[in-house]
Length: 283
Image (tube, rainbow, N blue to C red; front, side, top):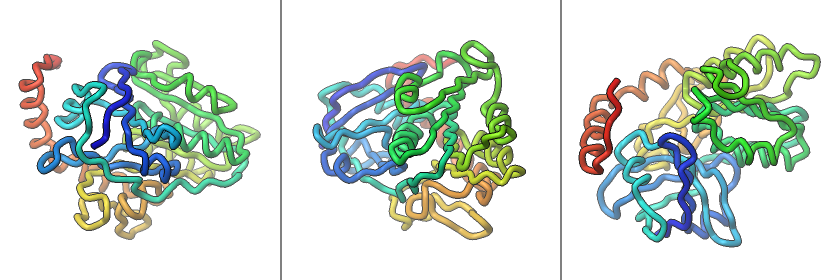
């Protein structure tokens, strides 16, 4: 069992949680992820990227947004309770080397999995700049952590309530057009954001890596639920990824597959809110 050591609320429905997982903490590398299951025999299995790890304490940290049944139940857990099943580290680690100028673009909750990647890139001797994007000021996360490990941090919000009013693609395009363009762009966030980041860098031939978070069950490539099309070939995010060349990913197909269970997800969402006594927003 994996005892919860710390829990923080970072913003609206976004939580940071640290729990015991000594073997994973000792082995994990930047870019890898976990699959967790809250119950021992039944329940949804969900992939979550490792945001940080402490091999001395034997703990790992995750950052997640309470949007579905399992993440709402996870958010309701407290320090001292334990997560039943944690599988990891999974996936191929980020390829780290000295590229030169690395620009990391994190959108929303995607800032969390970007943290260990940006730190590893900095440790490898790269000049690391970070663009953090969010819908509004209340949804900006991990700004201070990113400032500690990077050469430059730019905040953009859709509504202009914090930092610059812009989408992440605007300063990304400016960077590509500058006299010192990035040698590598790493983009993590909602699929539509990663798609447009890749389209922004494509005309400038700037290598762009994206980290995909698809529907996943076993994390070993057996179920096939996480399959995506990359460069016209079928790949499995859990074993071939989660990182791929953003210019080769078929984002339209990926987003179509992500919406396959919207009806079931909505039903589970309502039942979970009723069970936990969470008041739903009227839209």
